[in-house]
Amino acid sequence: MVDADRPNVLFVLTDQERYDCSAPEGSPVETPTMDRLSSEGMRFTHAFTPISICTSARASLLTGRYPHSHGMLNNSHEADSIQPNLPSEHPTFSEQLAEHGYNLSYVGKWHVGRDQTPEEFGFSYLGGSDTHHDDIDDAFREYRRERGEPIKAVELEDEIYTGTNPRDSTTGTFVAAKTPIDVEETRAWFLAEKTIEAIDAHAERDRDGPFFHRADFYGPHHPYVVPEPYASMYDPDEIERPESYAETYDGKPRVQENYLHYRGVDGFDWELWAEAIAKYWGFVTMLDDQLERVLEALERHGLAEETVVVHASDHGDFAGGHRQFNKGPLMYDDTYRIPLQVRWPGVTDPGAVCDAPVHLHNLAATFLEIGDVAVPDAFDARSIVPLLESGGNPNDVSLEWPDSTFAQYHGDEFGLYTQRMVRTKRYKYVYNGPDIDELYDLEADPAELQNLIDHPEYGEVRSEMRERLIEWMEETDDPNQGWVPDVLRDAS
Image (tube, rainbow, N blue to C red; front, side, top):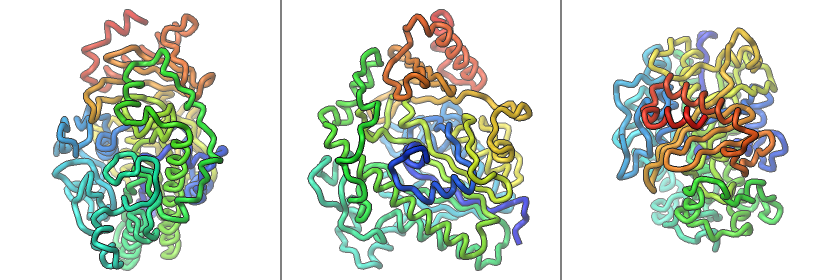
């Protein structure tokens, strides 16, 4: 039997899922399984990615380091990737767990190294990569062939759809439409199926040591292409405009408005955005249903009580917020705030809500502490196990939990662009290397519409937030600090 002090871990990572889709407070998106994790475990209200770029965030998750520390600053599949592979000298949580008796398996999207696979980091890889980012196996295409899918459908995979808008093109990057295939032919179903097989295999091995299984779902990342019933689940006419849709970019860095043109969405009206959001929400619900299938497999084998279940996302998605698409050089909560739920039977209080600010890459240290493995000194991350054990109370003086999160951005696709961010519960300050900085009062302006960087009544706040950022840059050896500390201090 599994040592009670070393539980199994099921880690489900979605790709580009917004925080507010599975936040229970009035969310219009149906996510009963994610809601169940929240009600049976702990939900974090202020979890953030260290960077809103897939490769960079996933490398941080593996290494417990900020991007400027591990060096993977933009996407590894791009021709202009600054560092296409993760340096071997960086310790990873997965290798540490494997060395200490965990059986590690992995399905789905990888996107951490152009020439590397999960198997080089302690995992047994079971397939399911997408051709655009990784293409490191043929498992999903073979699955579709076995089900009798036409060769053309196999080649185009999930991008088969019908519809006219948005962007009616299988080669376009912005697609939101209906696919005629059955849900059983989707990559989401396949990844859940492979995860269930991994759970079955563990049970059949008579549980020879704890397992760590990671399921990386490709979605709700664009293209937002889903089958029925999800394609028609949400009526575009009933979707309300987000408050940030009123964005004018007045007083904002010029790159934000430029990005509308770069992404090709500057001419989109609300009718078009509503259709896209409806498909995005349908994608989220489809993933939630796959998670339900996986949790049922744990219960069927009697493993639910000895398995920690974690759901998170690598980063969010604008999906019309600020009238933007995808992610980019804009550090709004749409793309930096992420969902995070943890169910740990016997440890987390059912229905607990934690408002402490945490980072995605805190999970690297967390997984090691769950597995009773020492956290390498090289990690920037701190385990959130104390929060899980304390009921999520960040004010517990024994925890000395920080009240800020930090993030960065280095550019992607369209070129390099330096940004750093510090965020507290009330304020957000963004340093933009090439342009004006940003300051938001999140209590008065949760949609982040008014840049207060030059507002005379916020001078003290601006100074204090800049000092926080400078201290973090010094503590983490951020190479960018050599460009700006005097300027920031003078301006403070």
